[in-house]
Image 1 (cartoon, helix red, strand yellow):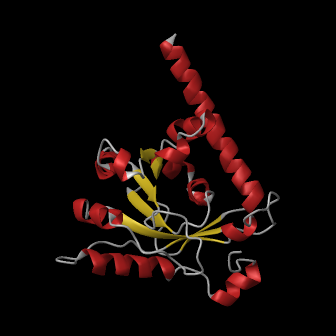
Image 2 (cartoon, rainbow, N blue to C red):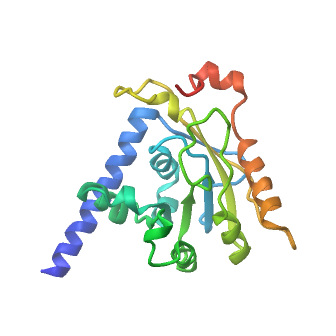
Length: 228
């Protein structure tokens, strides 16, 4: 019975994944711009800007199916375990590496789980700002996690990934999406340099990401205006 239940859940997770990908394509028509790399079967850490809860599904949905199967988002346990539906989506559809954002409640080091996933051969999607950026600045300061990954696994490509227009497709307070195209741009991989310190590396990685953002006049033309 346990084996049968497991099979049913895997089939349900696969069907839900297809449904999420289809929904994303209908709502936002996400387009991948492989500007700095090609969509190859290679282990990577995609690090992205974060303005919406939809950022991760959009990145995940534009990856080719073969890459999507090996790519796991790093996500907040307190969000994805809040309801049974989210728990199913987070753990079984996206196969997320769930981490606790509350230092006082942690029973393990989140970096151990992240590095373990990389050691198992998974690619990852991470948001180095830590929280959603609700300011008018392009990016919030990066947390130390990206630097720790770069130090521990200098062989893995760290790919800057810019999600554009998503905050304009579903503005805060709105329930009906606007008919805009979401573009996910993948830049050239970043690797830590010998003897490069944390602050220098994070500044360089942040610049590599912000350089992928559309020019301000293009963002306004496409509807990606300042957040309300």
